[in-house]
Length: 417
Image (cartoon, rainbow, N blue to C red; front, side, top):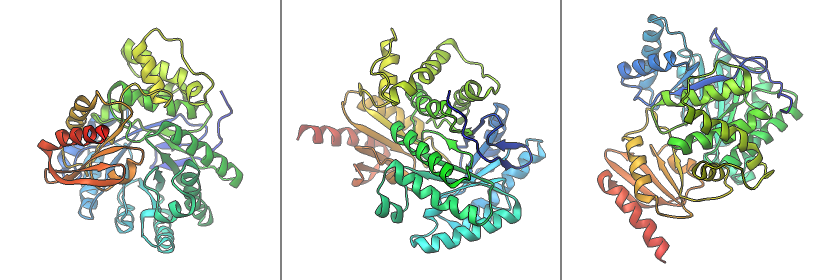
């Protein structure tokens, strides 16, 4: 194992410490609607009992700031002290409004405003508020959702992701605000690993190293989602890169926790989860072989289980024996049954070869974060779906009960050409 990257320590509330010298912190995210306070409190209660050390909740509208405040109040009244993280997309106004409410805020500052200089100014104001309230933040940039300024300047690459993050990191340093965690997630395991390595290198050169939140975004579900997450996360953790993790599955968020706990146990001595023999076999194989495959140190692996071998090779993008799926885990912005739909898409498209298919919960992140996909199924809300070819919408406003069939037709027609 390589030397651990020595990071600063970030405090989230009074009880959670992220950084070198502390065990890896395990987190997850609610998939309830934030406006449904009762359902969100119930899910948080269940996730905290299952061992989540941080729980993220989306705040899609200004009205949800008060919903989030009520959720936190209810949890604290019950004695549940797990810190909450507000997940913000695009709106600097909402980001600033939640600062007094929760212990941590996840933002992508590049999306604060289309004008880059205005985005920088708004981020500066946001940091001032966070300093005033002693809040932690996560600067979270995802592959495919980089700001226009960065893409035009550097392209949409792992290096661009790291350079984009460093601009905001340097603003934090200049503002003497150090309660910062950084993430560079991607659904492509190779892109994800290379982006984090580059960011770690750049922060080392700068001389200020913030803790890193690592994860594979839109990993999917089942064995594939677990293996894809583990091969990439374990590769970084084995290099000492990573201080807090989320395993993003298109399932009940409680199902993410044992996988993340296995990684935290293996790489930082955190408590071990209770796993079945089959689960442990899958996760161990992903961690054992992820780095050698991703680093091209081996081309094949000596496993008698052909299914597991194929899954590992595909997760590391060394062999594609079935369609590659990208699927977000869902959150309070999702307006349809994402898990059920994803399973229907997988069943209907399993016979295709050499295609990447994305199933995304909403229009907010979907088109950007399915950057690697050949085809995309994106929920519009109100029972409608948009189908994409690459990054272009080709069929809009399709009723949900027709959308999977229309997706299959689209792929078949393209492959027949």
